Structures are given as C-alpha cells and as structure tokens.
Amino acid sequence: MYRAAVIGDRDSIYGFAALGLDVFPISDADEGSKTLRQLAEGEYAVIYITEALAAQLTHELDHYRLLPLPAIIPIPGVTGNNGMGIRMVRHSVEQAVGSDIIFNDQE
Image (cartoon, rainbow, N blue to C red; front, side, top):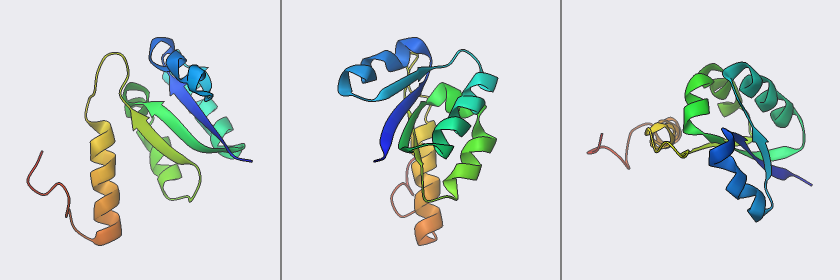
C-alpha cells in the first residue's frame, strides 16, 4: 500500500503528523535531496514538500515530474507562500494542454 509523506523544516511539517502523514524534518538541502530520493524510491505515492525546500531541489523535482509516481506537491511553509506551487501547476497545465488555459491573465 502506498503512503504519503511531508518533508521540510520542522516547524512547517509537524502538524501533518496529526493527520497520519509521515513527516521528515529536514535541516539542509543535501539532507532534503537524500530524503526525497529515499521516499521516491520507497513506498510513497504522494510527497508534500515545503516550497522553501522545493526551491532548493528544483533539479531533483524536475526528474520526478516525468515519472508517474510519486506525486510531489509543494506546500507553503511557516514563512509563507513563495508562489512555487502555483508555478508548478501552471507548468503542468501547459505541458498537458499545450497552453496556459487557467492562469493566462495572472502572474
């Protein structure tokens, strides 16, 4: 059975443990990259990642975007939203449809 995980800074992710998700606090990008690889190669179908960490791991995220699993979803952290999540949705829509049909008038 597949599982769901959350990775990022400790303050941003620990609330997800109450929802039954596995949480993996990360202190730096190298640790984040290693943890992301372990989770993606394991039994995790959904991995939530804080936007701040995702911004540091764009190369790794691009690699997993081409694979059917896991779904890697950026979420805002305690420091706020930097817009990365919406940019990834926009990019996915453009790839699937061929143009930006949802966000064409917003930046």
